[in-house]
Length: 67
Image 1 (tube, rainbow, N blue to C red):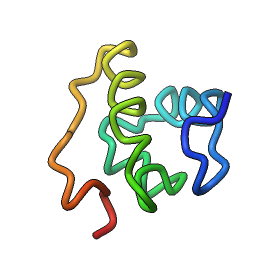
Image 2: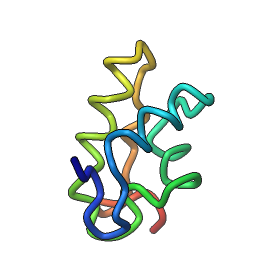
Image 3: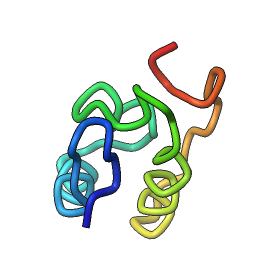
């Protein structure tokens, strides 16, 4: 399933990045581009971080991380 449609990032890619050490939405943005476009995927990415036991960083600027 796609998590980030803007950058064609899948749930599998997000989970792999988390396993490799991504701990925040900002980390996922830097690695995969998550939440760097429209920002609609930020909450889903944060939810996946929470499932993995990492407290998500949700300090998003105007709905996206890269702004």
